[in-house]
Each structure stands twice: as C-alpha cells, then as structure tokens.
Image (cartoon, rainbow, N blue to C red):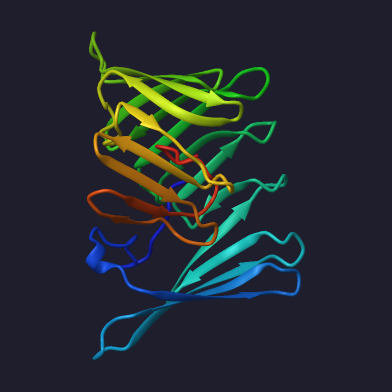
Length: 248
C-alpha cells in the first residue's frame, strides 16, 4: 500500500547533506500494542531540536486500529465483519471477496469520481493472476504467471499498445534477480536487469545498474523515506515487505 503523509511531512530528502541524526521514542499499551511514536531530530544551533508525534488508537474489543493522528489531523479506519479494512479516512476504499482477498481499491472523495482505481483477479488456489489499474486518466494491466513471470500492458485503445515482460529468478521462496524485456512502460526508473540480495532478516535488497547500487531497508514502524547518493539509495518503509506499483 502506498504511504500517506500529512502537510509538509515529506519522505526524507534527496541529498546526503540533508541527513541528520534522530531519536525515536515508542509507547505501548498493556497488551504490547503501539500507541505513540515520537520522532526527534536536530535542526541547527539556533533552532535546537524539532519533533513530530504520531498516535495510534485501537478498539478495545477487536484490538484493531481505528484512528491514527499526526499533529492536529487524524485518519479513521473502518473494517468489515471479517476484520478486513474497507475504508481509510473518507476517500480510500477497499473491497474484498468471499475468501478475504482484495478485489478492488479506489481513491474517491465524496461526490467526486475516483482518482485511482484497481481491480484484482485470482485463480482457483487464491494466487493473484491479474491486476487492472486506472490512475490519472491512464490504465494498465498486469498478468502474473506462477509467481515468476509478469506481462505488463498499457491500455490505451491502440492497435499496438506498449508492452513489457518481466521474469523473476527465484531461490526457493526468495527472488534473487529480475529481468525486464521491453520498455520501462511505467516510468519506474528501474534497470532492466536487477539483482536482489537479502540480509538475514529478509529486509534489504540491492539493485545494480552499471556502477550504481540501490539499497532498501524496511523498517516496520517507520514511514516511507529515502536517501540518495551517487552509489546508494536507502529506503525505509512500513511492512509488508513487497513494494507494489499500485495500492493493494
């Protein structure tokens, strides 16, 4: 799922000069549930230390997150009888099938058309085999085969739409490399050939393109942020471990 930010809480900077030390404090309830995270970071000698605080409110009966606040703003969460998230704040909506699989997702404010929409299809054993996404007036489809092959296509109504295939090389359950044949139709700026190396926690990968390496570490309780240098990109984000190109 894509991260959500409030106001000027942008996901980090684009230069190593913007990196600065920080301290995070966590508070938990009696059952071990996270209720508050406070992030403190140094500005300069004249301004001292700045901070932001995020609070989490859970339902006592279900232990589900019902609200998350940052500053003076708060976002609410609504669930169905099976515990699936069906609404986040007022504009993000989720639909699930009888087996608890995500069937559709849309970003739609009240009284307005959807600005983003995704539909998902599954095979008989529950594996996702198709995704259709519409965003910003453009649409594209992805077909998944056995977890190792993907076919991407732009849905623009032409007789020769842009297409690309992607093959994943697996080491049992872990992906060690991927190879794209065709253009970067989503403008994701990913290399055609990418090698992926994980640490012992499974939360780090390295992309290699010419002489440039890209690394990402997944921090369960942090938001999506990144730091670029000429050789390394560090990205920390909330779990789950995969990084989808569209919500859901």
